[in-house]
Length: 238
Image (cartoon, rainbow, N blue to C red; front, side, top):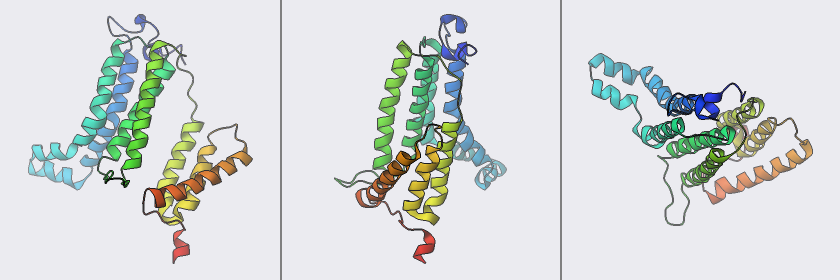
């Protein structure tokens, strides 16, 4: 794949025209920046709020609902700046650089998702403390990875869907199962589903690690962070 994406990998100035070195890479980053905002816009267009604004002719009201300002300032604009920078800089290690950019996007999205959650009050953690802490660590890590990709590293390789696919399924499972099944079952099952993403799993070690991580989550979320997660399945509480 690395041979066919010269505009993305940015291995040389010849991949673009004139001063633009990475047109495909910049376009890809810009697309990542715009997708959540466009999805939000589509959601608003399908809602009764937007239809009412259009019917009443209140264009200003429609624009107010159609664009999420915090998403625009926290996520979209920084990534558009990265896309503009990407277009004009030489990228020697495309795999590391664009991997860092994707992690950068995830960290910004996590900051936006937790922006309405209260943070620390004195020495007490709030619901938004842990997400912002992990997002900050991911942000710093992503910048370091992208910086390494500017200097050296491999080109883009063929993409494998198994790992990201099972991780995505595990996240969706956690979101759907946390209320009916409780934290204990959901945390363990989520880890095991994510573990299916690797073809080199050793299941004995995976089961042990899954039990340890489940126990850690059952201690961290309800007792350290004070989050109101129920531990048992809903049918056991009735």
